[in-house]
Image (cartoon, rainbow, N blue to C red; front, side, top):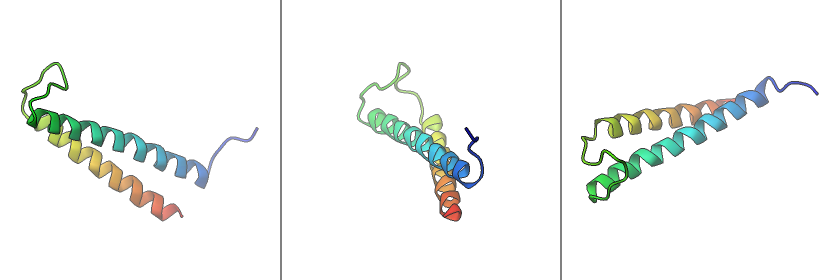
Length: 74
């Protein structure tokens, strides 16, 4: 069996990073929404939003970069 390499491997890497980053983006946004609604989503509820905002920005940036790289591979 021949190893997967080349453009198909690059597409799968883009799709997987896009999927993982979008899952994390949704989790960070859910945490922000639940904190605003006073619903505990984590054991340390009531903490500041620094990690949530920076995680959301990082995940959104990775989603954009993955989508942009995937468009270049087509």
